Image 1 (tube, rainbow, N blue to C red):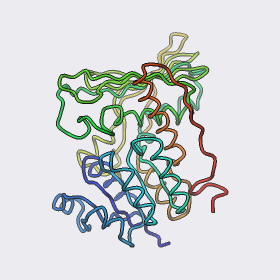
Image 2 (image 1 turned 30 degrees about the vertical axis):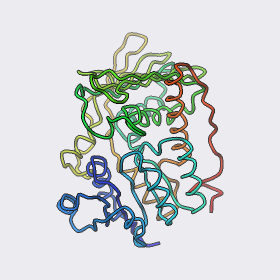
Image 3 (image 1 turned 90 degrees about the vertical axis):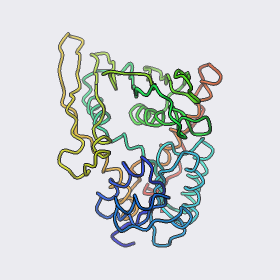
Length: 357
C-alpha cells in the first residue's frame, strides 16, 4: 500500500460539494482524484484537475482505493455493494441504506472482501456532541434521567426535490433521524423499546416533516424531535440528571463555514461561540465554553484505517445498530404503538479489530 489513498467521490450535490470534498482535500494522505457526476464544469472549477466520469467508470478504476458515496438515499446500497465487490474501501453518507436487510448485506460483503466499510456519521465530531461527551465524562449531572435532542428547521414551503417527494428514503426523519439515533446510541447504547410518531404538517407536504421519537431504557428516556416549522432560538440538546440540567443552544458552525468556502484548516474553523449552561439543582447557574467542532478526524480515521489497518471511525456494527433503530421507529409510527428493539449487535470482528486478519 502506498502512502496515499486515491479517493473517488460519487455525487456532487450538497453533501458531496459542501461536506465530503473539502474534508477529503484537507486530510494529508487522501487524494481526491475522481468525481462521478454530471456537473463537470462546476467540479473542475471548484476542485481543479480531477477526472469526471460515471459512477460505473469510477468503481471500475483500478487506481481508486476508496469510494465515497454521497448520492440520493436509494442509490447507497447498489453503489456501495458494487464498490465492495470491486475491492474498494467504502464510505457511505447517512442514512447507510434504506433498511436493515440492505445494511446487513453490505457488512457481510465488506467482511467477505476484507475491506473497510464506514458511514459518515459526521455529527459525532460537532461541538454540541463533544460538549455532551465532556459533561457525561465529568459526571456533573449525576445519573442521566432524560436526554432531549432537537433538530428543528423553519422551512414552511415544500420544495420540489427528492428529499421532500414521496418515495423510499425520503422525508425529514430519514434525513435527520440517523444523526440523532447515532448520537443516542453513541452515548447510551441500544434502547429496550421505541415509541415513534410522524406527521405531515406543512401544506402540500408529500412525506413526513415532523417526527417525535422516544427511546426507552431501564433508567432513562431519550427524546428525539425534528420538524420543519420551528422558528427562533430553541435548545438543541438538553440533559436532565439527578444533580441538575444542562442546555445547549445554537448550531455547530462547521457546515455553515464549509458552505461559505472556509477551509477546514482555517484556525477559526469549528469554533462555537455559544456556551452551554448548567443549571445545578442547588440553584447555581454555570456557563461552560463549548469545545471546538472538527469533522476532520472522521476522514483522518478513514485514512488510517486503510493505510494502517486501524478500526474505522464509525464501525459497520454501529451502522447496523442505527438502521435497526431507524427501521423500528418507522414500524412503531405505522402501528402507532411502542415496540421492542429486536436487534443484537453482531460480534464477529471487522476491519482493524483484534481477531480479524
